[in-house]
Length: 98
Image (cartoon, rainbow, N blue to C red; front, top):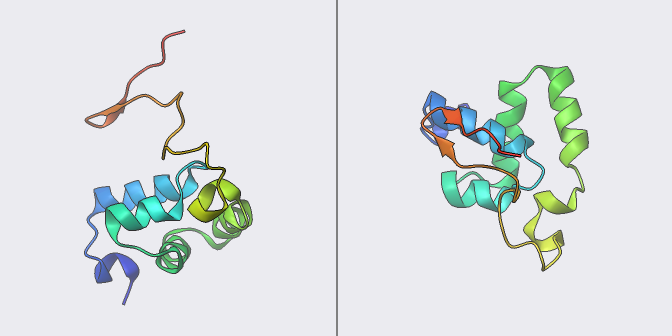
């Protein structure tokens, strides 16, 4: 059984899990809090969803990354998103104002 089926994730939720998994500042704990997927589940989900070459790139990127694991993070970082990130409205991301 695939992870998306096991956790009953719709297409929009699957897209959000993938986006959160790629984001450097979003720890696996945030994905678990929001969707119930453990780090192992996220890894398996990403492997199921991605082309093998892209999965290897993602895996190399997140492995050992301090910002992807809450226990390895600096205590100064207490948010799940970058301070430069804007709110998402509907399906559009607000434009940054410089």
